[in-house]
Image 1: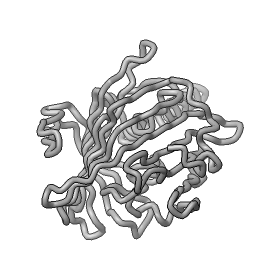
Image 2: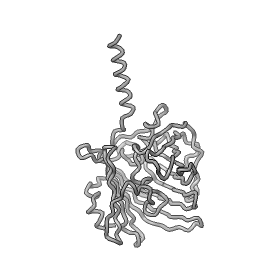
Image 3: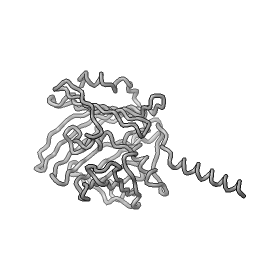
Image 4: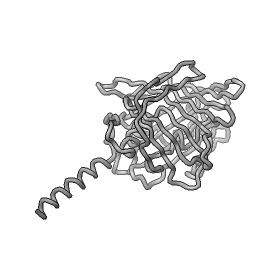
Length: 294
């Protein structure tokens, strides 16, 4: 009887370990009913940083829209390489830059993220007008990302380990109307509704309420609340599934951020998305960042 109990305990421990383990790189995952909040959010981050693909490129535009409706337009390029390499602890590398107009051309950020969740990411900002690289500290993660309504953390540095999660419910999303495209997205889409609270305290937000799409695992909508519990920002993401080598890759085609206090909005559209095209790792270095090749 004692041996039987030990066997059962051992199986339970192994099952618990399997449930808590991270998704494997270069595979496609979808959240399912019965998963914990942690399991769902690990998939959400997996989708956010395209860890299912060996590499990815995104060419698009960013629109800065003020309360009056005035629009400033920027052209953008984003490259990412997924490594999942235990030998030097590199998980993935991410490069984001403005390519037009001339006054912002070359402004870029480079981020290295590591396998070890306790190891802080390394991030650099290249400022071509000064011909200088500035190391981005984790203390600056709440700064605006290149003048947008997103923070550096929103775009580059927030990780699964930075928050705690609670599954609030499963629900159908009411739909999101985009003022930019004049279309409604994800009407009645089945979702998981999750509350995410930052482990860092004090911090610029007290919680996020996320709607995670069951079909793709993407976080399609979130509300951000300030330390006083007041809503101050919303983010919306539209995903499109791409068939790559018989695998279904969910890619972010549209990102909208709204500051509900000022009425300012930032919209990012990705118009040319490519996966597994053989991007070289040497594109993701400080030396390359300084070459202003964009």
